[in-house]
Image (cartoon, rainbow, N blue to C red; front, side, top):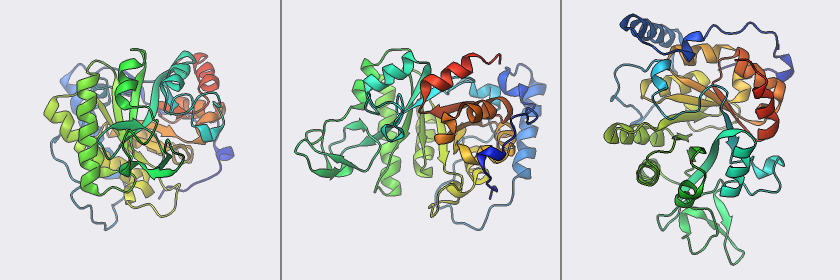
Length: 335
C-alpha cells in the first residue's frame, strides 16, 4: 500500500524525475534492449503480490512489454494534452453549470478552452444502444428513475456514442471510459468488445482510447486490439486505495494496478491523483514498465498540484474539470 499524506505536504521544489526517455523515439536495437531490461528490473522491484485469486485475468498476447516510445504508436493522450473530464467538467464539480456533462456541447466547449481530449462515460442500454452517461440510474422521459441496463433508447434522452463520434469536431479526441453498473464479468467483457467494434466501424481515423476500472473489460479490449490490429490505446483505471471496499486488489494498490497493466498488454494506468501526489515513485515505476501514467480527481483542478504532477512526478497527462484554468497554466510551461 502507498502511504497517503496531505496534498499540502507535497514539495513543489521536488527534484524532477529523470524521464527524458519517455519523450524520445527509440531508433536502435540497443535502446530497445535497454528499455526491456529496465522494465524487467522495475517489475522485479515491485512489492510481492498478495495471495489473491485473479480468476481469468491473465493475458499472453504480448510476451515483450512495450517501451514508452512504442506507446507513441497508439492513440493516447500525449505530454501537455489536457483531458476534459466528461467534457468541460463533471456537473457535480460545479465547474461548468451551463453544459450538461457527457454531451457534444460540453465536448466542444472544453475543446475551445484547450482540452485536446475529452473523457466521457460509455455504457450500453438493454436494446444495445451505446450512450454517454456516468450513473447507474437515469430519469426517463416520464420522470421516473430507471437502471440503464434495463432501459432502451425510447425511455431516455441521452447522447448516443454514435452521435458524439460522428458529430463532434474531428480534432476532438476521445477517452471512452466503459461503465459496467450491475454487470457480470462476462457481460462486462462482451460489452467492452461491442463498444470497441462500434468505435472501430464509426470512427476509424479519430484518436480514441479506452479506459475501465474492470480487469475483464481491459483484457477484452486488448484482445480486440490485437484481432483488429487497432491502434486505440487501452488504460486501466484504479482508485489506488482512495476508496474503501474495492473489489480488486488492483484498485487498492497502484503498484498492483501497474503490475496488472504491464502483464496484460495494457498501455497505461489512470490513477487517483492522491496516490501519485503522495510519492514520486509511481511515475518511475510506470515509465520503467513501459506504461503511460495519467491521473484524475479533484486535486487536478488545483493548478499547483497539476503542474507538480506534470513537471516532477512523471505524469503524462491529467483529466481535469477546470479545463480553462489548467490549460492556461500548461500553456506557460516551457516543456
